[in-house]
Amino acid sequence: MELSIAFQTNKTAAEYVALAKLVDQYNFDAVTVYNDAPFHPAYSVLLVMAPHITRARIGPATVQPARIHPIDIAAQAALLESIAPGRTYIGISRGAWLQSHGITPEQKPLTAIRDAVNIVKYMLSGGTGGYNGEMYALAEHVRAPYPLPEKVPAILIGTWGPKLAKIAGEIADEVKIGGSANPDFIPVMHDYIGNPDVSVVIGAVCVVDDDREQARALARQEVALYLPVVAALDTTVEVEPELAARIQSHVEVGESDKAGALISDDLLDRFAFSGSPADLIAQCEALRDAGANRVELGTPHGLKSEQGIKLLGEKVLPALR
Image (cartoon, rainbow, N blue to C red):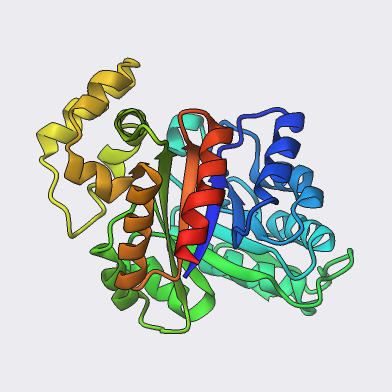
């Protein structure tokens, strides 16, 4: 099982460089950045961090065709691959909360993702003759005008749903379940994908500290931001609609402490990584045993980010290796 670390893109350029240098001290398998609106776009951040990450794979989890046209995804991916040859991947998903940021989702999002992946592969493999898709199309003369990678980077598709997971089983290398730490959903996703050669990645908020109670208290507040959405997607967990609505109502008025207080220990452990290093080791081992191919530990990592990263690198990673 691989272990990766993920960052929110809300920092200065100097902070991105410092974080890249810090994580490069440890043996993480991958470094991911998010592409949430209205934060910095993922590829701009990756291009800042990439020169300082010498071992891990790097990539976005995930970009959305509704926000970035597939030819632009391909072009940015090619540039990143030129900095970190053989160590990049391309994450693509439908995205969430698009309309609240003034972004109109595609009318046929699953078709759009299939077309987007096909166009990215066409461009990065030096394809010619154009592409005639239902949602996206390229004229016959369109081809990549920039240096091409030695091979097309791995494709990751983010989803919880059976329909997109099945498509991913045909066109992707990895599928990511975002906002989850639930081992019970891993075999469900493998069944959805239907292809044993496609890896399953699972990732969520991570808060680790030697003071486990403080770590879990902060994680509750972080999880409250997305729990009402992802809990409805997890077919192995039952969350009362009234509870989800109460959590959401507190989040909307900035009462993250009250929202977090409504989240039980069991729900917390299914939708976040939190507690002491020993707690995180146990969570990751359970996910590995359930069939996860990669576990991704997300922002904010600790009560203080740098300290959390050090605990992950010095205590969690060695134990799992």
